[in-house]
Length: 480
Image (cartoon, rainbow, N blue to C red; front, side, top):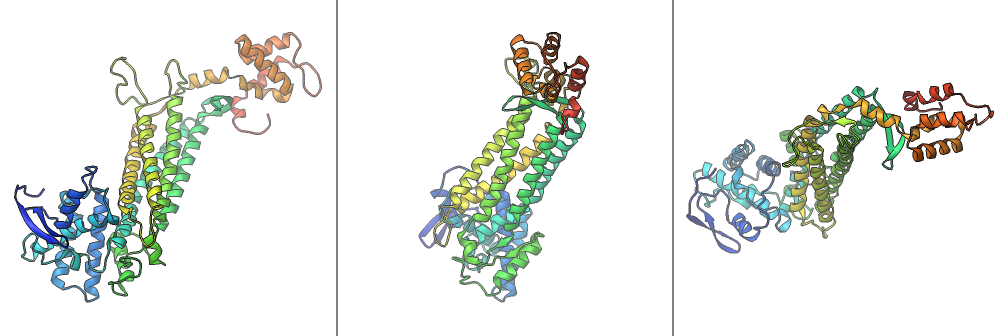
């Protein structure tokens, strides 16, 4: 934390004089942004700041290599960037995400903090820039190419923990699928009784859905690797060395360890936020899948005495301030809320992406904020849900079989013998009489109402029992 003071220093920018807190590492343009945009109280994400600083670090090295930046200034900028990347001065990045100018306030906040810290390394004082925010730190750059490049790099830096969280969830669901493979239960379609399935099959389907969403995320991440850094203000590369774009992409690849590519059209990279929108959409699809799974888990664990109660979730905290002993599916509820937020983030990104005009999308700050937020919320909520819910789920095989045995749809097992019409009659009679299918069959047999559909020969109770006892076989498909 910086030393606090009620005193101010006077700085000047192109609009005139600005009072800046005496010990602030930022400067005039950041102070104007603080005063102009007191909107949410939010600050830029740590990963976004780090990604911007990686760009400033690389730019100083490349500009020096191209003969445009003095050695002492380069060293001071690089050393300062290294300090920020190690966690110093984080409290100095203060600009609200809801701002104007495509992220100019974000960019200048970064430039000014680096410039002031680098200036002090060269013997200067705060606000007396031996290292200039614009001329040196921002050399060969524009807000318009640094912000989208930082979004891409930042998301890619968080891709590994995101994919790891998704993989861990899929693995946990796969383990449960194997563990529950022998548990027979009633399937349900339209929230109504359906043919038998195994609880393991249900959880195996969840695992598969999550794995396919992982594939979508990986596929969408590939387009984020195209960097338009060096396009400067509009894509033409004005005020940047002709070799700057190529060398910046190589340097950023080296410093981050990411596989990054040159953009094949710097103008498109400036105008379009479609790659970010596509990645956001892949997270939205994952959020939809996880919402569905969380809702299913809540249903399957409902009760425990008056609901389905086919599974039991880990008890992680009391569920009520008034009802002793109540335990709620809190982790599934948390995941629902987190994923609703992620879907809202995605909607904001979609609207912001389509709101670009001509050579620039000025909505980049809100795209950056929402994309980084949805990545972090996804990582953390999935990790917690996996560890505190999925890994501890227990099956209740007796309850699952209870519902299966009382499921009138098991008539499907004997319809190849007695036909669809007789099967329907049995189901309706069992429902009206509030008895099981087996009990209804016994009554129909005693009254001579059930015959083989093809031969017309009366059906025996042994044939019916043999068919009805093939619940496991019914979960494996084919003709009984």
